[in-house]
Every structure is written in C-alpha cells, then in structure tokens.
Image 1 (cartoon, one colour):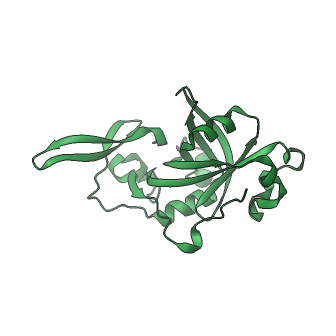
Image 2 (tube, helix red, strand yellow):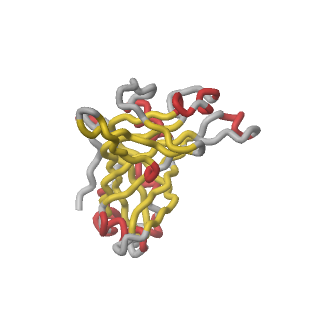
Image 3 (cartoon, rainbow, N blue to C red):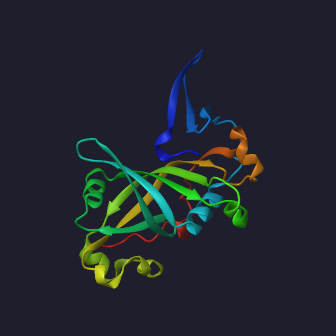
Length: 208
C-alpha cells in the first residue's frame, strides 16, 4: 500500500539531460511508476472511490516542521473533501498555518470475504490544498447540505470545516484491479493526474 508521503520524483541521469521518474513505496519496496505506461485506472474511478469512502489519514506539519498525522471522517462534494474538527484544536491550527496536507484514503476490498481473510485495503494517496474555515460562518449554513451530518448540533459553535482540494497526482494501489492482481505490484500501482476539469465537478467552495 502507498501513502501520500511515500511517493516522490527521483531525478536520474539521461543522455539528453535529466529525467524525473516517479516512485511509490509499498510493503515490498520502492517501485518506479512509468509515465509511459497507460494507467489501469481513470481519474473518474478514483473520484468515485473517494466519494464512497469516509475515512482518511491526513498528514501535515507543525510550524516547527514536525510531522503529524490524524485519522478523520470526511464527506465529499464535487471534487473536494470536507472534514470537521474542533476550532481550537492543534490540527486546525497547524493545517491553517501551512495550507497543505498529504492524504491517504483506504478503500475496503473483498466485500464479505474481507471478514474471513486478511485482505488489505486498496489506497488512494495525494497532496492537497487545505482551507480551514472559521467556525462561525461554517455553522451558520455555508456547509453543503449533504455534509451537515458532519456537524453535530452541540458542536456547531466550536467546530470548523477543513476543505481539502486534491492537486497534482493520485497514487493508487489496488484500485481498478482484481483482488488477485493486488499481489502484483506492477499491476496494482498507478499514478494519474488529479482531474478537476469538469465544470460541474469543481466542488462547493465554502463562503466566509
């Protein structure tokens, strides 16, 4: 499985200059992701998987550069993810300071079979811009209707919404392949651009 912090661009020597090769790290080691290889999964498939999932691990850094990560429950609208945190939490403060996060979303595979066998989840990893919205405007109705369940009534005055906007590239493991293919690293790994080109899927920016 990959995580958002576990893929990078590695510069290699080449007769015509330097060539940048994307890599991803998984349980078996680092594997090159060839840009020339046709992705086995599409951006649309990834967005659908993100819409169905509801849990993510969000990585960020403190103002002192110290790494942190937190598990969050989220909901999606358009091509943005939203999560709710306490307005006075360190998570809200640190993410607001940097405005950048790394996200990994585990995607359950195997259905009922996963209850009997140790089938690992697939993963979707990406970097994102993160916008921390003040508690006041968010609680007053700026949250998209489908996300109101993330705001318990008793916490609306003390909670804020973090709007996560994926950018750059998705790195996926086990998305769009069979369970058997998940054992084949070259088949299970994919790197594809985050596609936000569709006008109707640009999300629901929060006001305030």
